[in-house]
Length: 301
Image (cartoon, rainbow, N blue to C red; front, side, top):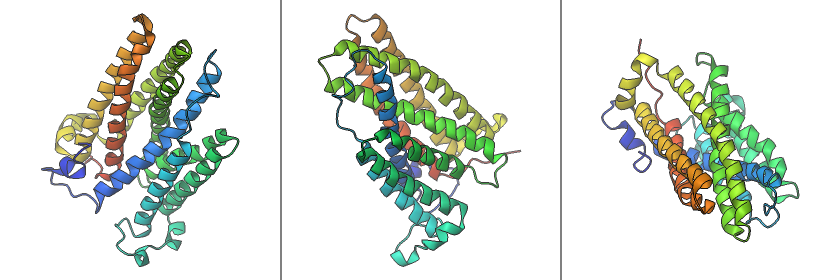
């Protein structure tokens, strides 16, 4: 599903996707990844300051400015789609920039563009911790965008997405930066193992929140008595099923890493399953981007 995109999800379902669903899914996956990187760096920096002996000052070069640039480009591309009436623009003349200010989706798209721009400036400043505010604005904008006012109880859906997306960004980006920090500072393997253990405790809470909000959100869009059918007969359900399977693999890898961290003679052996976990989390991000571009599931009565 993450490799073949919208065409594989839609095959045989009888559903029609919006024009350019594959490209929109890719742009949104880039946007999600661009959100994960700086959020994870901020989380790990906080954990490192609380870990005795952790090499905070000697960490690797931040990827936050590059992530903000990628997020800015992705958000700009998504805003151009909104500005043409949710169609893929073929010419610059088709893009009605002024029209973005007159619609809810347009305003949220512009908010994301501006937020990534500000986040990049904060990342290059002397106080990169200020990124937390524009990055939070991106999460809020995505939560509101995913649940329009016409939806049943949109604030409940936005709240679930807010927690789900925020925790997912902390989990994915945090693990990536922990591994980068450990690889960069091999002179303090003990502190690295303690830092990974501290992250693992936080990740367990994040996984619980992600699971709870994900299940609740799915049941809001697919009533319990239709879930099994829709998981195989709709594009949204198929992609959601692929995401669930990938998250299950991630959870197993996280458990293996935690067991190695506790019981192995060399706690740094936990880095091997943790690296595999990062790879699978990359696929989860790709599937999540695709999920936002597919038709919503059918609410059968």
